[in-house]
Length: 408
Ligand SMILES: NC(=O)c1ccc[n+]([C@@H]2O[C@H](COP(=O)([O-])OP(=O)(O)OC[C@H]3O[C@@H](n4cnc5c(N)ncnc54)[C@H](O)[C@@H]3O)[C@@H](O)[C@H]2O)c1
Image (cartoon, rainbow, N blue to C red; front, side, top):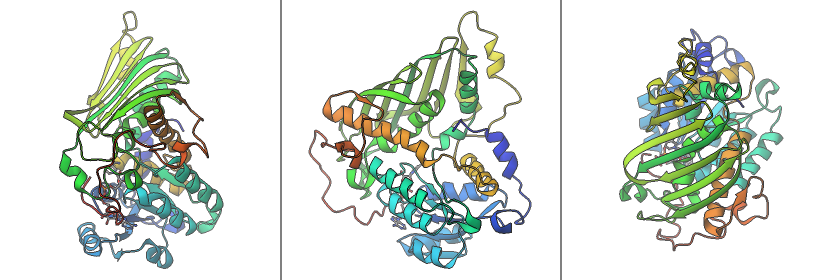
């Protein structure tokens, strides 16, 4: 899927005047499962669509927490089990905002009820789980209201912001020449206390460390701009934090288009930043932000003799929203109403998750990994830690089973 034309999507939904013309004649009916740290971004994004969608229910294992969330966002129905909501109410989209270990099961449950799913990142714990959900999506074809095909989309909100689509268009049109070198650095800081939440820092419920849970945003955007990766060599370490997973990984990859890219994923970096840099034949394009970006976060430096490209980059007609959940949900709601592909399709998010698996496989085996190497029977297909991390676990076994916790 090309990067989105976000302004058009926003125009299609913003200020939507009434509840008359959503699926079945009303607004898109949304449910949030998991009312923890990230759920507010989803509720805010739903509210920002100007009536084109509305929250009909919230679900959390922790009922008082769900009730408080429902009061804050004026949601009429509260439940502790998604099955209760799906059994009693018409639902168009289930927003899955629970810990990663629960994603595949909840997505499968929603698909079986004919509902679309918006899965928080990472979409699942492993490539095997993603393939199970893709299988469930195939099996659910035609079972939605009016015979629609329920789809699973994944939250990769940074694809939906200022500049990213423009950069991809300029690269696709050959205006910037080939991308030769790129850098993708996610250097964040999570203090030791962040990992007190029982599900964090564990392979079996979080699926990985900053490669899986933090840097994934940035290298998903990198791949959305540059196209598929081909080969990766990586290292990972647990430098400091009380986790079973890595707290730092570094990878070097080659894309199918021939660019060489370095990728850093860290949660131990006191001065936090998220940075992407693309050196093409005719310009350097850079993005510097932390958790979301605007037009001002981009820098464009033309190569000598290509100064005229600055005007192409600064095209005044292209006004983009800030990257974030609101921009992605706008696209999603438009697709639900018009019957298009919901962004970002799970099949496409799988490519990004495959790079995660390949990063771990390379880091833990000392070998380069090519796209397509990790399939059924490969040790890194069923678990992101595959053959095992080269450091001993520190988390108490079994303590994360409830999957409950606090803010992101
Ligand atoms: N896109 C982003 O920028 C972003 C940012 C932060 C977190 N996330 C992702 O969002 C997800 C949730 O993270 P969080 O920080 O909000 O977690 P959290 O621990 O704050 O909240 C999770 C909530 O889910 C509930 N829950 C767990 N299992 C459940 C189940 N089976 N049914 C119903 N409720 C259940 C818990 O009680 C808890 O209230 C994770 O996948 C995380 O990676 C995404």
